Length: 353
Image 1 (tube, rainbow, N blue to C red):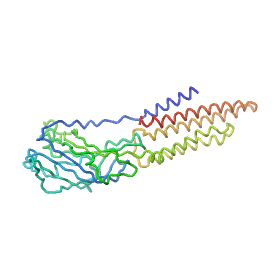
Image 2: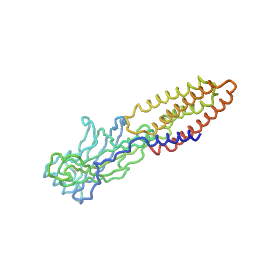
Image 3: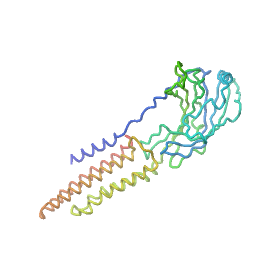
Image 4: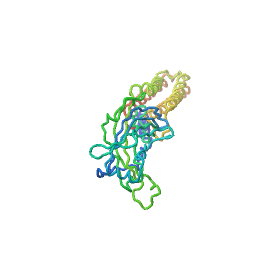
């Protein structure tokens, strides 16, 4: 019994530690504190989020964002004749052929205090580079929209203009941001310096590949019960069958041998179905760990039943009662250790995902 418990413990440890750690984004650096004369305040209101694709790591969104800047930056815009539509770009935008980025007015509005305001309407598909599905099907998604200063005059190697997001989380969320199967968990904004690995041809200029970026994110969380019913409950049903199979008498050889092999094939098809809408991963999700443990349990049970079948077939007729008692004892050990492994994965496996 101690040997089987040790085997399950080693298997659980291996399963929960498999997978590569998430790589940190070395291209992002903390945004520096700069004078107000070099700041552009930025806000956003996301009206719709739709067409979420976990497989492609993309989603579509539309709404508005606005920029506010001081007289010093307005003078730079006028002197260098920078078009209003080229002050910033949607950094993680994909498939720009059907994207929309339009200013609400041809000229910025002058505000009290000497600042300028320009509002833009956008609609595009975006790429979620930091998507993490280790906890699938109980994942949390953070869908980002990145705004980045565009002209080289705004780079950290030139004027060093920094985007400063200023808005409340509720101001970011529109009325049509709900996604099927998810609930909105929150919203946040942040700023950073995007450090490119190129200078864009500007020789001898330090930090010419560093541009200020503001990120606006809306977080989503899957519905726990719905995810359990759809993805975990089928696995639980197969594991229950595996746990009950050893209750069959040891002399029912054909029936005992058929159950673990059938369960193994069922687990394979269930996992393939669960991954139909997911990309290929270089790590194990929580659901993958459940199925991997199921494969180990089904294989171990098949080996156990083969051992029991051989043992009883080779024993003399008068020793069959003692042999069946031994088989039943080993079956019970298997059931206890497998049940303990299932409970451990369900309770602790998600935390290691």
